[in-house]
Amino acid sequence: MKLHDLNDRTCGCDESEGAPGLTSLNEALALCAAETPLVPGVDILPIGEALGRCLSEPVMSRVNVPPFANSAVDGYAVRCGDLIGPGPCILPVVDRTAAGDAPAQLDRIATVRIFTGAPLPAGANAVVAQEHVTLRNGIARFDRLPTVGANVRRAGEDMAAGDVILPAGRRIGPRDIAVMAAAGVAEVRVRRRLRIALLITGSELVAPGQEAAPGKINDVNGPMLEALIAQPGVSIVEKARIGDDLGRLCAELERLSGAVDLIVTTGGVSVGEEDYLRRAVERIGDRLHFAGVALKPGKPVSFGRIGTALWLGLPGNPQASFVGWHLFGRAIVDALQGATGKPRKMIVSSAVNLRHKPGRCELRPARLVGFDLRGRATVTAEAATYSGRVSPLADADGLLLLPSEADQIDTSMLLEFLPFEES
Ligand SMILES: Nc1nc2c(c(=O)[nH]1)N[C@H]1C(S)=C(S)[C@@H](COP(=O)(O)OP(=O)(O)OC[C@H]3O[C@@H](n4cnc5c(N)ncnc54)[C@H](O)[C@@H]3O)O[C@H]1N2
Ligand code: MOO
Image (cartoon, rainbow, N blue to C red; front, side, top):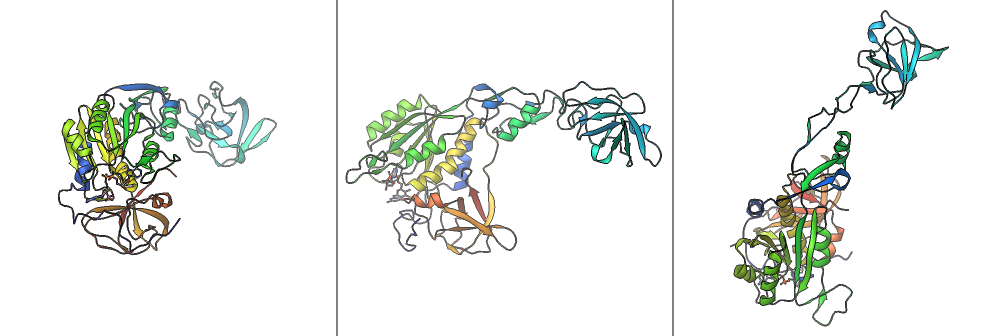
């Protein structure tokens, strides 16, 4: 990956001084949560098809887990009350029980040969592991007396029938599927699939691989956002690339607003004469919740409503578009689905001193490089953020938050870091 000239200033991010007229990052995130309605409607899915979907109601265990007391080891089931004195204990083996068998009976001074997972014989209350037992002519002998419950997995010790095992709003992961399978849950109710439209604007754009005439560039945001948005529970039902034309944009936004839950646009959201998105939403939309955030990159990011559809206007610069989706797009998707989980966050320190211009929070692609003397993760980042550059994204493990008021970031400061979930 090429090293960038640290002194070059071609980004445009710092064109307006400070943050006049911009909404703070926290306020913008609060508006995303407050102004996003929960989508109506649920799907009922087999648990094996529910990965990544969001529970619309709590899930309860249908059974006790385990459903019956069973042995945690291969060994010999005993009744502790039979075993008195210092030992050794000498007991006849009167039965044999394996996983899947119906429970045996232990109703006399004896032992039952038992295997891991087999139901504990009625009357037995402990299992002696076979490593501590010698067996000769059907007689088991062991020296150490077991305590009541030794090597026994009690019925319901993991989960009890009726227990809430997963809360509403949980985004289902592989571990949740394990818990539901154990609890005898076959199907779950999850929020219905979101319908998202992706509209990439810019007269300069061509599809990657297509011959680019002078003045044209490859569309980065289209393929990048398709990959970022494509999650279980979300369908991109419309995607289009259109030129900078106010009339066409208005018509397209109006059409899409009746068909989807969320319209995501990129480009054309800043202050230039060819930037039509805000004007289009002001003309045909119902609300503009914010237009511009004290954030770098991503300053022009905007959020509003057109009819029943939400609109997220991401900037054209690819790094700004990426950060805008990471912060606001994911928050809006979570709110539409009623997801209660919070994005993962780490506290790190920078392995190198960094400079930052006060006024806007900055989210700079950064790489995890090791640990400091206190065991805290350390990161390195480029000396500046260039929102038009794409290559720093591939090198990064996450986004490092440089607080808006800080001008110097030194290696002793604690910083927030948002790790990427995908590899
Ligand atoms: N006078 C000012 N100019 C700019 C300001 C400002 O405050 N005052 N803000 C700058 C910031 S910050 C950003 S970010 C950009 C965002 O502008 P837009 O959202 O209107 O985006 P465009 O002007 O359409 O494009 C910006 C840039 O990105 C390239 N681009 C656009 N779409 C794509 C795509 N799909 N794939 C790859 N590259 C794309 C486009 O060609 C431009 O170079 O505005 C600054 N200007
Ligand atoms: O270049 Mo701008 O700050 O949004 O990304």
